[in-house]
Amino acid sequence: MSESITFGERQDKKAVEEKPIFAPKFDEHGLIPCVAMDAETKEPLMLAYMNEQSLKMTLELGEVVYYSRSRQEIWHKGATSGHTQKVVEIRTDCDQDAVIVYVDQQGAGACHTGRNSCFYRKVDLEAGKAPAGLAFTEDLTFDPDAVYKK
Image 1: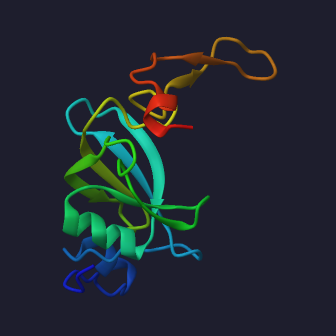
Image 2: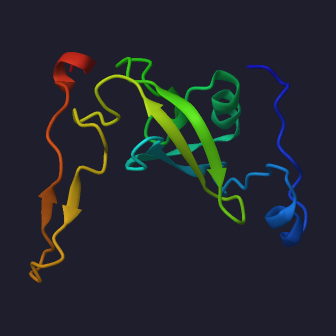
């Protein structure tokens, strides 16, 4: 990884909120939440985390790179499946402790379950029963067993 990309210093609140300098705030584990959204439809695709290295790699490569909390390693989205995410735009919130990456999703989908989005279910707000129910909002777009050779 190139050392050319750096982030700004986190100064006072006003500077973080108003200066045109990217100064991401990573949590106590060195992570920042990242929502990937389809650049065309604006639909959410997935939520994952980045560390400083993966965020810099994302900026350098133009493809999204996450940090896998379960595997404790850098995760270049699509390295196994071929379903990469091309960066279209990156936004940060007011205090720069979360990012949204608008992506051009390559391949059949973003979710390891075989769907376009990891957000393929919605909470049934009408049910009023315990436990709360879920309804599926999309079908499989690829066979995850074939793609990931489980």
